[in-house]
Length: 434
Image 1 (cartoon, rainbow, N blue to C red):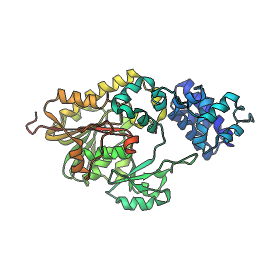
Image 2 (image 1 turned 135 degrees about the vertical axis):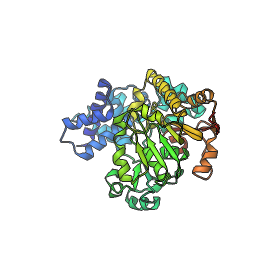
Image 3 (image 1 turned 180 degrees about the vertical axis):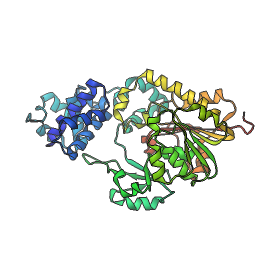
Image 4 (image 1 turned 90 degrees about the horizontal axis):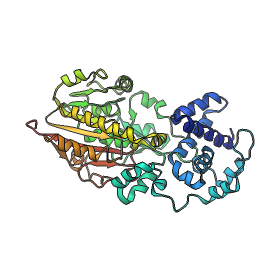
């Protein structure tokens, strides 16, 4: 396909996303099935353009004076496909499978770039109703934080030290430009691609099949490390999902002690079995999904309970930009109720003197500091642990500054730490059980 055809295809996919209110991945898959002549490189470029347009939907619409799929695809094309504005003008020639020629207004807007007088939420590419939450979390850095969340994300990996040290993983992935992460001592990063370049399919590498690494954002790695799992401890991953943090904590435990993985959704939990086998984890017990009776029967035996709570996923907007525009206030309220429910469940499973680690992949204070404050007030037998002290104990070295300025809890963000958005709050249960 010619580049013009890719721009037109992206506009068609965006039209499907908006009209049918479906995830971008589904719309891209549907388009590919209907246009089998498109090669893998074409489909990848179209996907890159679609996701870039969704990441910056508001600012691109402000630039073009329209939020129509065509306008967004044209405005996103220069950066997404590595083209000049003149290239886009030439490619939009009205030929088969290409966009219609640009109007004088479209050409002028494409050349001029984003206007200077946009509203803060537009400049930040954040839904208007969520901008007060961003301003509450980040103050005068709200726009910069939003803009960083509208950029592409790198590929982050966690070296599985049960099978390979980080240096070995770095060597195996050297051809992809792999580098050590700044904060996680077991992290490996492959930088986000520019233009139409693609991120490598690292899970196709032999080293992944051997269990040397897992794909996991550095922020998620940090959260798992701060939980404090260690050899001979009893650990519970209460909302395990596909098991990323379970695997990370099992590695920190050096396959000793016992780690239990639980999730209420069996579909989310199903991949954990293959991942545990590949990683060489031998100290994990996977509880039946949704069997809360069996979970509660374990009682307050755990040194560490990790609560990776259901949340808005706002911290992952770089990777799932369409989710940013689908989030509604009703869904956020539901997540907050679920977070308090799972925190209450977790509180009864931490042994006296044990630790509870509350984590979200969100940057919204409603899901983060507000919930930590609620837990502190409701469960007086738990004392907050300043994240800096725990960082020195578990990771070592000087801890980073939390993106929201807190000394007690840690908020990681793309702008401040080059991670996905992650929140971590730590609590210690009183030795007498509270």
